[in-house]
Length: 544
Image (cartoon, rainbow, N blue to C red; front, side, top):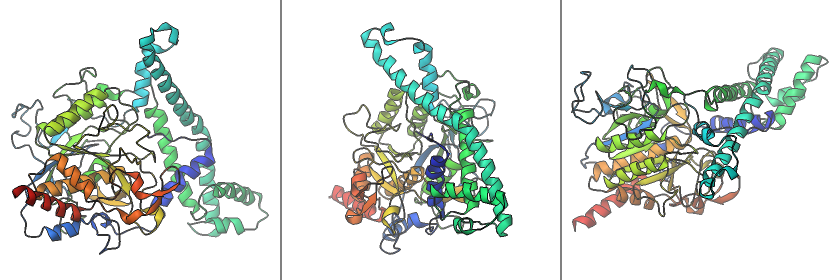
């Protein structure tokens, strides 16, 4: 799911660098654009501010939103006042005061930490773990070695094996070539910076230069070749930067993601086969000595303190964030996801945000049981659709509420990423997954400015950002209309979307021109102001 498929270097440069640059070099919207209004502000936000204008004078109740993610900087200046506190637990006394099975869970729980305080940072892909697990049974065997009813498992393993070996080879096989090109590109960048006496060398300067120096001519030829398959508007130092980022990602994939011998689970110290464990992990929801940017950014979108004059305004104004750490740098494990959902439900969360996903789920039934448990307790689950530019009606993105199900669950919202608008090709994130059946709505997910660890603020792109925008709107609705059920929240959010009036956009992945409405079940972008009006209307009808 997250792997990069590489044919040869120039394809890598074209596919990875150009897309990255397009996302970051394009004209940027206002930092708070996701809260703005399409009519008043001429930008495709979700009308959060307008919703609060409509709600002015009305009272609200505090809503607990669980964020299952990589860890959260709960000390961040713009988040510390909205963190959930388990008031039934006495801090740091080593006792499970509330008898929920988790010792000293003051702010939530870390399912990928050890009892000694250490934490899992990186983990492998689920594809790698699945290949290793199945190989113990099927490696060296043929279909004839199994009875007819057992051959489905063998065929599944063959499919896993083919995918794993292909992707690993593309990663490892390209590393030497990419390292060499990275070295050459840096060399020529320095050369031409000195030649032109500027830090920012562009294609026109390189293409038009005339020289008899063989080194200069060699550099010109190489760079012309690269520019023919990338964006000629990019500066050379930008190419160097993004190629370097790709190289770092590829090295990580080789060392961790596709490494059959890498298994950090010993840090946690649990029995992986005991899915319904209670209490494994630790209470370090920040995730010390790990990268908690993702979870901090997500939490900020939902709940960064509104109106405090610092940082940003999150979507929801009366929430508490329950921090649940279950997502490493790699693929999350089904056991941790399911148990995090159960923890959220049992400890009072009414909305759960899940900005993660993967292509394999070996313990899918256990995750489904947790999803169904949340449904039985009236808890809404909001999930990112994925960043593979894929059709979720045809591909697998776990967890989900549709594979193996006859109908979608009433407490699940699957979210794609929209952009701020202005032209046809930036109404939607070019990376976003979509699906007329299995993606419910779109929400802002491009150039989203939110919190970063250490009281910082950064932009990020992804359906990971669109999901918390939606979770924030759900929490806003529930805060002012607390009698709404999870199914009603979903219904309101989907029925109140902005349909963008038959606008045509370029379908992610294919580039085909399609109607925006064909990319999701609701056909539009969530709109908090209209959702509030619809919720109020439903509430008034109930009272009558």
